[in-house]
Image (cartoon, rainbow, N blue to C red; front, side):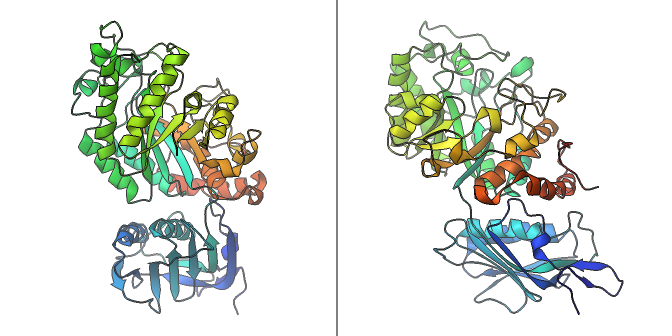
Amino acid sequence: MASLAFLIQSCSEPVKTDLTQTAFIPKPVSVTATGTAFEVNNSTIIYVQNGAEELMKTAEILAAKIGKATEKITIQPVQEAPSKGIYIAVEASDELGAEGYELTIDKKLITIKGTDPAGCFYGVQTFLQTLPANLASGEAIYVPTGTIRDYPVYAYRGMMLDVSRHFFPKEDVKKVIDMLAAYKINIFHLHLSDDQGWRIEIKSWPKLTEIGGSTQVGGGEGGYYTQEDYKEIVQYAMDRSITIVPEIDMPGHTNAALASYAELNCDGKARDHYTGTEVGFSSLCTDKEITYEFIDDVVRELAEITPGPYFHIGGDESLSTKHDDYVYFVNRVQKIVEQYGKKVIGWDEIANAELIDNATIQFWANEKNTKLGVEKGAQVIMSPARYAYLDMQYDSTTHLGLHWAAYIEVDRGYNWDPAKLVEGITQENIKGIEAPLWAETITNLDEIEYMVFPRISGYAEIGWTPAEQRDWESYKLRLAKHGKRFEKMEIDYYKSKLVPWEE
């Protein structure tokens, strides 16, 4: 007779059968166990709801993962649910809401029903966490049976990567997207321009990449994405239920553009390249019409190749722009973004302007600005530097990163509630959270991984799981089991001493 905890195989090796003991991250809303197991083997077929073409990529991603332990996995469209195998389908549910899913694991059939294609993708990610971290070819895989019902608390769960201070090639960006997708992150914010580099091709202003994209912090060769590269990144992200949010920072953080085109400067003189890390010295000329023609072209070209709803206008640390000029500039730029069908996001400083409808404030430092934005009707993305900045050192011995905001160990990164951080800003005002990685000290993929992991798993849980269901003591034990998953994904993570990592 099977116990709730495990079954005994013929070889006397225990098979886990208690689904509630699986170390899920983010923690699901509800998990119930039924005490048996489903066997994944060479005859397992993935069935997809017929006509749901958007689910095929999700099925292919699942098949590729399972295929590491089986000879082959077949994907087959069907009109109705099969009696055995793995079945993925969309089924509306008011109870679960957007991005919600129900994962039912029986002895013969696994059913993943999402309220939308994203929900199906997240159900698959949860299912993958029931599998061993080290899938080996030819080994039997047993999945504990039960039901998981799940949905996110926040619609916006993001990470930002600064590709301007140091440039990262598109294959590295795709690897980051894969890592984020595994933890139900659904927004990837690309900081595409700054003083040190312009990283996206704008066909109507070719010198932006020819000149502005030619260097980076420390004077390296820099680089940029062609529009084809960018579209490839966007599609790769969409296939994993991730929306790309492009950022063109302005009117400050613009030296790369000012070096590329003299006419964007008030004195008509092109600036020299900048390879340092100080901020606040650059500004577009806010009273020249050419500036707004330039921004119109940039927004138009980027909007055309960005299917997501958002466009980030930056707006932070414009220390050399007079207040009235800054307000005038942000007011005009918002309307340009709106003209091309996108919703404005900006760092909390933009709250000083007259915010248009559907504008979003990204809180990083100034509570007064953020409250002002809320008073003007804006939603908020919570990215508090002192808790959520991925470029902050873990502690004083960390060899990468900065610490001007705080040292952010894994527990500090996890132990905060977006809805209780700023007085007067509640959950109804908050669109979601985002963890930014600024790249002044980050030069390659390994360094990205080290600063992002394991903290991003905690940010993913903050964005997904209700605050009352989260606590550090239980989270660190679940996180401890994910070290092996990080290693299998070849993630060079920070092995915090606060977490009892499993060997």
